[in-house]
Amino acid sequence: MNRNFQILTLFALLILAPGGAMNVCAEDLVLHTRSRPAEVGQTGEPKILYRTVHWDPEKTAIIICDVWNTMKCKIPADRVAELAVAIDETVRAARDRGVTIIHSPSGTMDFYKNHPARVRCLAAPKVTTEVPLQWNHLNPEREAPLPIDDSDGGWEGPLEDGPAPQSRQHPAIEIMPEDAIGDGPEIYYFLEQQGIENIILMGVHTNMCVLGRPFGIRQLTYLGKNVMLMRDQTDSLYNPEMPPKVSHHRGTDLVIEHVEKYWCPTLTRTDFVDKPPFRFQGDHRKHVAFIVSDDHYDADKTLPAFAQNLREQFDIHCTVLHGEGEPQVPLVETLQDADVVVLFVRRLGLPADQLRAIQDYVDNGGALLGMRTASHAFKMNFKDPPDFQVPEGRAEWPEFDAEVLGGNYHNHASNELGTDVAVVDGAENHPILRGVSPKEWHSTGSLYLTSPVKDDAEVLMSGSTPDHTEPLLWTRTYHGGKVVYLGLGHPKDFEDPPFLKLLTNIVLWTLGDEIPD
Image 1 (cartoon, rainbow, N blue to C red):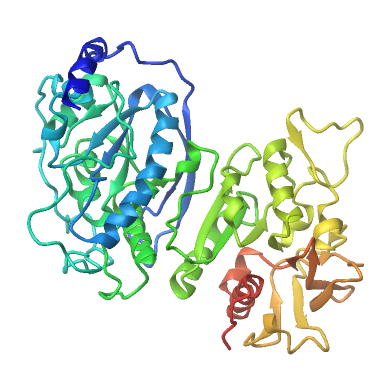
Image 2 (cartoon, helix red, strand yellow; image 1 turned 90 degrees about the vertical axis):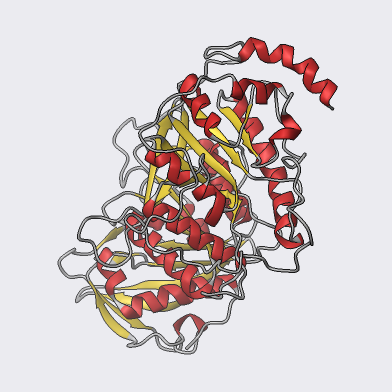
């Protein structure tokens, strides 16, 4: 192997300098990020923000942290081996788009001493920094304590005797001559030499090395870099027998949420590969995908907060697909492994491939909850103006309401009247209504005119004004999958306990889970 390294060193000489032979001209990276930044004077949990950002790939690097070939404990080592395969696929795609790849299997640099990627990294000249390049411990002036107790080292099983057994990066991750290899200050020197401003961290372990290494999130943030964590290409070192005694995968989520609150946004591999976010084979949590847009009902604010409650109370894996700006549903590949989709968008003419992904989901019997404006989710206009044509590359699905939801939306009643909500006679014992109390209440949102609904729809609740009574909540099946429509979802509804209980019950029912009283 050393002989191969020596042969490849000649190739490395071509790419040592910025603008080397392997640089490519590429379009901006379009990255869909999630963060939870706390505002000054804020009390309670911060809002979850979904933002789309654009990075220049020639100024962007991915750092792969400590994805070793083995570890002292078999359980996390097996997860790392599984993760390594996914990481390799992601970095191949990123490399092809012009992103620099930096491999950082700490403590194993002797294995790579003659590798051209190691030679390339070491060739970067030293630069002075305003902060020391070192391990960075938890910073109590900036962040709360970690949300998991890793004081036992995070080990989930017996440890091998002797020193740490790792000797290299996991071989599933290919290292190319145009990459870089490092585990210390030379990484920062290399970033400066290459003019790299944006860093995506991936690897292990989130609560330890990914945060703390001299090339980790804390250090790079102190140095003024733009930093993101790829949240589906990481893992924590956490023993679920330790507080807060949640599943290992929920423990990792808690650490990721900590990063999003105090350090940097996160993203997923779906921005680079046409696949849903990576999940470990041992992560058996059910998956609810929320599709929202930023219209006047604030679904992009209310549903992410509701999704967080599902994570915390029911250990459900939740993803949010947030269309921002131009009508779109980014990362639709996420639907491929969703157990339930919650749809709350309004009058979107989506890119044709995105709408096709949603159609494929329901055509294949995927469970669906349509909320409020979902009845006119994919019809761009209430009434098309003369000579209207759907913009090129966009698509509508005006039949969605009648065909899939089973409704007949044709307008709404007065905004000032709101809606009187009530359980219909004979529906009291349906599981969706279990524990919902009171059985009648008033919603601020206007009443949607939805009748007549399909004959096979089972209406559970009605909405009324002095002049109208309309179906408000019903269930049916479409291509064998459960479908629910709920005509509520005004922002004020999310402050109403019976509505929140009802919405939770609907999600649990569509998942096939037990509904608590």
